[in-house]
Amino acid sequence: ELESREVKDRRAHQFELLDVHGIDTESIRSLAEVNNRPEVVFQWVQGHIVNMIQTEVLNIPSPLLTRVFQDLGNGMAKYHLGLRFPDVPVPYPYIAVAEMTLYAHAIMTPIVSIQWSATPFLPPFLTFVLVFTLWSLYTVAGELENPFDGGDVNDLD
Image 1 (spheres, rainbow, N blue to C red):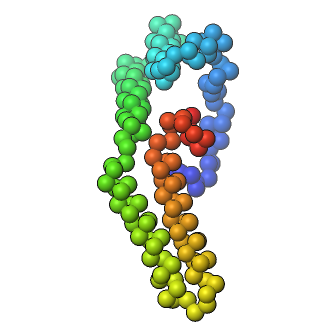
Image 2: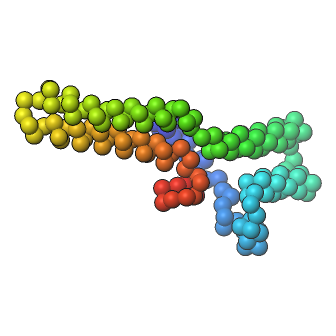
């Protein structure tokens, strides 16, 4: 929604950002060794906020601080909710019906294209293009079903 709008206020580009260069090497190494990295970073952020409040670097009213912790917690809850989606496979009946439809399409396309074409060269070309395109879409959908399993080259890791 906001992608096509032009940014008129450039002050946001002047803020200092936290990135990996702002974290010490020992913390990065310890983070690389744990399995639950998002939870560890979440705890780090909360701990730093509490430390900044105790040292009075952050001096904000309690209702605002409560909202900060609530939003952080909501973000972590949404993260955990999103983790459930890669574990839900596409139902087998859907896959079976899709494959049977593709087989029927592969059988019927040459027959129909021969009936519609006046030349003998167009039906093989049309059959190849149409069948190849639909099977390609089907296999791409299978690859996208679980892009995080790390099993092949196309996965996101």
